[in-house]
Length: 382
Length: 91
Image 1 (cartoon, rainbow over the protein chains, first blue to last red):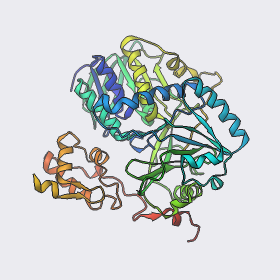
Image 2: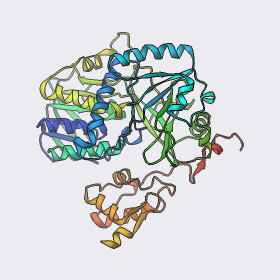
Image 3: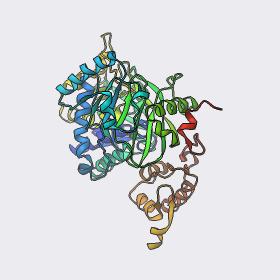
Image 4: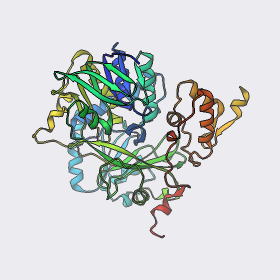
């Protein structure tokens, strides 16, 4: 193993690998440590969606710019990430939700995101399998350039390209400690040796709290256990991801034909338990067949759990901490890491290599949790 | 080489011995990474057919014994169940 590095990245999910790619592209010497295999955490369990329709402008801006990168990514990295832009349809159930949606659409449009407000009659033009009565909606918003991509392949694509540029990626290697001196990062210890470095990026997802603690930093994120299921493969029936904030459901049909989706369960709590529950299956199948009754004939095949790394305002914690020089936060994505990863990695790599700051990075700094009133992201499902 | 193209390893995803060996040669030497790259074990058989075979191929190619913990967890359902049955309250 190398004895030193310009930057050490902790975590081999999509964000860590994307950072390794962006930093090594700038000629920096990068070492990435992953305690298991690449995409073994939230990346490999996620719903694969790419959404630009948000209630906070930071998320909307990061998502829009990420989609622009995703659109070119298969070509840039020479690896098919299976991007499909079938749009996101957000169900709106009452006048109150509609008022909020109109406000959010205005903000999204001001950033150049093309979003339409649909009447119940128009919903079936987007996805004919939906039962508008069963969904109990007064309308929907729809952004045609939203979509999904393959999270495993995106991670592998970034990691392979990073390796070609000279990045060192160590899997099955756990970080055991971080050494600081006069509030400056000095060294990272792992199960396979130590590396001297001045910069550490914490991209460890739900384990990021423990990593931050190693450098003496307290973070407010908690792991929230989530469940998700996949059906057998069937002929392509619909292209859009369908979501509802009221029912908490999201579902889409992937390229291979399986329908993948999730919903919160009433007894949801934080922690690291990973066994799926029957409560989820019951809840999910009931809501899904209410939204799309024809799916009652489709077999459910697989069911697994993953984690949202959730912050008090459901927005990521990004950028350098003031307490320890060289410690860069890149976690707390609250269930939306995959879709924000390309742009977040770009912004952070510009900051690490050139010291370039950015208004989005500034407003998502760890300091925002200190006493001030938070503007929370309300557009969260699953 | 012709034989490898015809030897099916995963029936759910229609993967051949050649597909699996090629992915291992590309550097996907962790059983879980291989699974996520090729979708082995994600079909209706839930890995009962393909995973033991892929493990053997991986062990033969890398010369390393695969630790038991790298196998993926068995989770419900054991056999595919229709969403209609799951949604029904009948016991």
